[in-house]
Length: 131
Image (cartoon, rainbow, N blue to C red; front, side):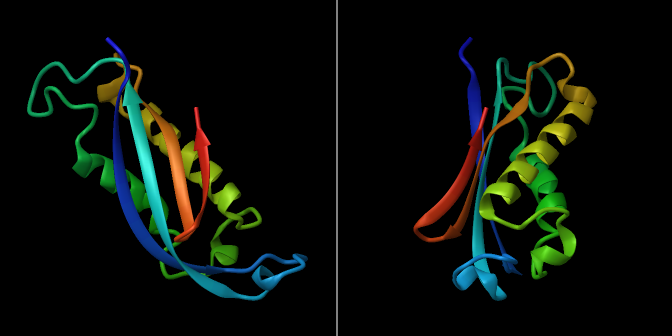
């Protein structure tokens, strides 16, 4: 079977600034972030209430909210251990989701992973990480 994917879209508000940057982003400003997370697997759930799914959208939303909850309505510089560029945020979200999926006992028999994260910082600009 070919890989199957699902994508969940969420939005959150946050502020950040880029120290030592030569441009507008050096000062504190906010964004209405849009986040697209894609989860892929090589086989669907075979039995139970989630039969025929990659992962339940409700479960995926909960996992994403654990991560975005640490950013939402906050100054990202205060909570992130890295320079809060869209690129670094995207890598962080991707890595954290894959660690969460690795911990899910239900998926041990299936190759389920976060295969793409796309973080829109503005309506015309996004950063993306893909497996």
